[in-house]
Length: 136
Image (tube, rainbow, N blue to C red; front, top):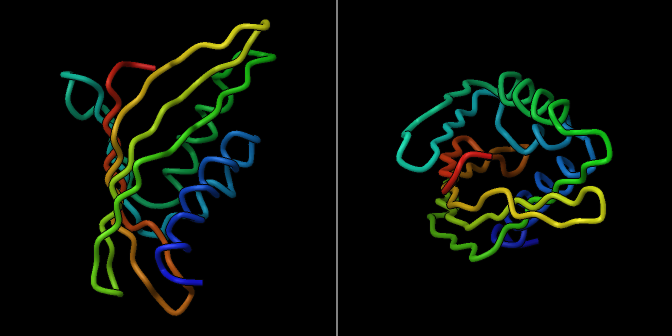
């Protein structure tokens, strides 16, 4: 599999794992020492998570915060990849939706910029800067 295809698989694994409640699987796409920052609208940076364990903790908390019967979906598109074969910069657009009580709702959208690194174990996200357009 090419690195570009493997990067698309990383993004898909994160979304599909998180959407099915597999927060450990979603966190597994990150390097052990990964850093994730979250900013929202004009509020600026609202969170900085250092390490896969911290990212996993945030994902578990977000999953627990969902209402009973709520199904969220994380959609990723517009993926742009550049890099040198060892490190890649990946920029993509995301949309988060929620289905609940027979209704569909758009929660937020935004842009995420990832740094993907290659090691003997394959590819992993070493950095994610997520910017949501509105609070979610």
